[in-house]
Image 1 (tube, rainbow, N blue to C red):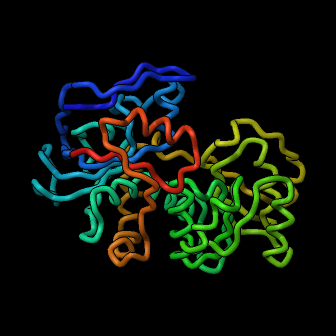
Image 2: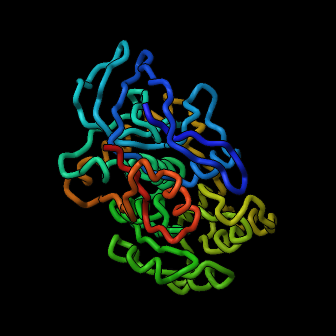
Length: 325
């Protein structure tokens, strides 16, 4: 099969499409013929040598895909050859074939193309995990989403709206955030030191109940300051870097909660529970159009190196999707 191969380098990894051995589905796995797959920041880190896959998982990048069931491993029930499916992966998606744990598969609603479906699993399950499972967001609360124009951010805006929350979005460019208002965002805010004051203006002085933070770094104190007393911040990304200076005494006095969260490294049984919980909530809404994937551009798989460069350059709203024949 064709798959992405690379020579890891922190500055400029060498990417190419190469012929590699086909995977075989193990017990409890399904083999998918990949029709489309999406890019994530984690893929960039992997090809730089900074984010290796979990032990035992495919070394090929790619954390989500859509395709057709081509073979079934032992003890697989509920799936048949030819079924359309989308999958959350720990790796292996940037290839023509991938073996997927059955618990990480979801059926593709009839209204979604393979291209659209490929842009759902990683961002959808990440948003669900950190808004609901970790963030405990409930109807009537207010959530602030940082780096909201990203793939996870743009889906989290929609998911927060569907959960009945008020959604505020923040980023470096207010212009790039404007399309999120059509997805359910109530207000757009600029990242930086003025963010907490602006949040309090919008919340009657109270602050938000939850921050879904994809930025971290030196911006983290500002995001914590935007919380109400007793509020929660779930740290999902480090676009702003891995280090922050915090006033821990203030953190303690205000009874704030800071949760670090990753998805890729979670055990397969836990991921299966999260995928199925997300599916129960999201599949009917994807079918009705209440939730929709945000695809910035579609790139042929043969130009996968170009797609990685485009993601690295920034300015992407939602996802870059790679299309395979």
